[in-house]
Image (cartoon, rainbow, N blue to C red; front, side, top):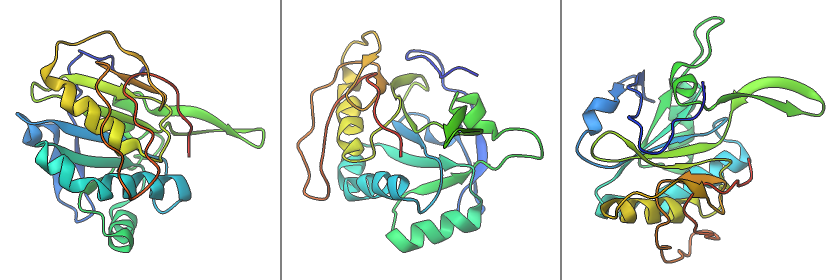
Length: 203
């Protein structure tokens, strides 16, 4: 499936987190939700991205936003990843069911054909969605650059009160709903804040 366009209703989902608790989109109704898709636990780019969200966690909470990570890894893998890096948010286990692709990744258009060393395979395109309190996609970031990604996501959340604009490319390969003001840089990592649909690097 194609990625969900800004302004469209976010697809419902239901999946277990690292502790086996089933999480759904419905439980986050009425507040912003950051749903970020990443390829694999405890790999370099995915670790940088997760720690970017971790280091900005207080700012996400202040903005009233929740964060959920999604990958095809299982709950046990997620639990180790969270424990190793002290991640304060949940990770959803979107595991493939037999020959079927991961359900949430597929619904959000992040399960794509990739290539490495000439070999093609199916995997997760590093993508982040900001879902507004109304359950609609307020921003989408494609081909995310892990470093400083939290800043551009926070900028998109800050812009939720502004009238929506067309999705345009952002520095992080993103497709955000509105070109939001940039957030201040943090000391935790190199922050390259941006907002909308510009392509950024994969892991």
